[in-house]
Length: 470
Image (cartoon, rainbow, N blue to C red):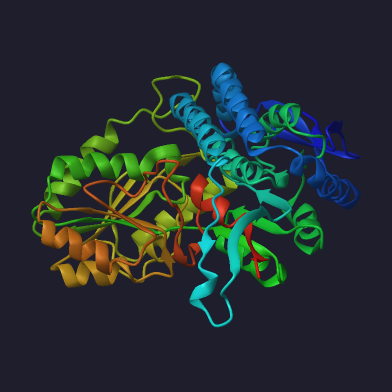
C-alpha cells in the first residue's frame, strides 16, 4: 500500500513487509520513507493551509460526515485489515471501526462549534468605546504519530479533530500496523484539498526526527511509549504537543464490592486485545477479606477464555504484536514468580501467544506492577484498608485511568478524589472510553487531552480582535 503525499501515491526506495502476528503471513508491503519523503509531505501540508482556509466550517463538517459514511460502508474490510495487521480478534476490530465512525461524526459536529467569546472591554481602564472578541484559528500543520494497538481509531482521533479545526495533517502510523491508517488517509484525501492529508510510513527514529525538527510543523500529537514521549517533549522546543503515553491502571475491589461484577470487569479490562492497551487493568488491588473469592473466580473465568485465530469470531485472546513482545511478557511473569508471586494460572508462551495469566500475592516493588506490562497478565495485590489501597494505586509514575468497585458512595467519592488519574471509573474497569469524553493522564501518562472537543482546543489558537468605536 502506498503512502500519500500532496494528494498522490508515493513509494520509497525500500519497503517493509507487514506480517500477520497470528501466522507470520505477509499482509502487504509499505514504503520506508526517507528524509526527503517526509520533508515533501511537510511542505505539501504547509502549502495546503490556504486551501483549507478557503473551506467553510460547514463544508469541512460535510466532508467529515462523508468520511464517516465511507468508514461505515467499509466496516467489514477495515475490520479484516485491522485483524490481519495487528492480531486483534475480529469482533473487537469491528468495535474499533464502529468507534472510528463515531469519532469521524463527532469531528464533523465539532467543526461547527469553534466558538469565540465577547470581551467586555469597558470593564478595564481605557476600554470605553472598544469592542473586543476572540476567534479560534487553526494552528497550521498537525503531525499525528499513532501506535499499533488501535491503528484506525487513534488515527481518526488525531486527524479528525485536526481537520475539523481547519488544520492540515501528516499521519505517521506504526510500522507494525500501518494499513488501516493508510486506507483511512486515502479516504480523507479524496474529500480534502491536495496536501491537507498526508501519510508517511517508516521507522520512528528516521521519520519522527524529521517531523519533530521541522519548523513547518506546528503541533505533534503522539500516542506511544513514555520513553518516546519524553524524547519528543525534550526535542520539540516551542511546538505544541499532546502526549498520550503509558498506563499502569489499577482496579480496586473493596470488601463491599459485587465480586462477580468486579471479576467480569477484571477479565474485560486485563485481557482485551491481550492486554496491549494503555488503559488495560494492570494492577488488581483487592481487599484481603474478599481476595480469595476474587482470585478463585478470576482463575475460573480466565480459564474459560478462548485463544486462537483472531479471524475466528469465537476467539477472545489473540497473539501479541510480535514475538519479542511476548518474550518480554514471559520474562516479567517469570521474574514475579521468582520474587514470590503465586502463579494461579497461565504463564506459558507459544510464539506470539502468551497464555492469560493470574498472579496472586504480588507486592509493591515487583517489576510486574512497577512498570507497564503490555500483555495478558492479572497481578493481584492484597490490601487491608482504603488508605493502603489509595497508597498502592498512587505508587507509580503513571496516572492514566483507574477503576473502583464498591457499593459505598462515600468510599467511591473518596477514591475518585484521592486516586491520581486522568479518569476514575466507579464500578467500571479502567479499560473504558467513549470517544467524546476528555481522555488523557497525568505525570508519566502524558499531557493534553484527546476526545474530539478537547483535542480541538489544543489544535487551535485564540486570536483577540479589538474594534475602536471612538
